Length: 87
Image (cartoon, rainbow, N blue to C red; front, side, top):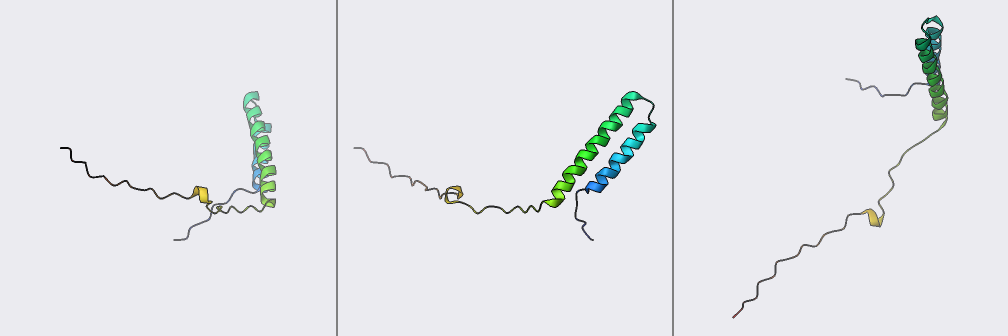
């Protein structure tokens, strides 16, 4: 079985979705529905801009090494002391 790596949509894919939503808006007779399609189209265009910026950014996350104050400290166990005999 081959595992497919997930990827984020590209700016062009978002722009294509924006164009589809704009086309739907133009064909919609109801003003509220048309306005919602236009809002979704604008949101897709904002996503396209962000996707383009993300594609230009090479970001690699590396876990920082543990600092001495981050390492767990060994806990000391107390030994029970023998009880004193009382006369």
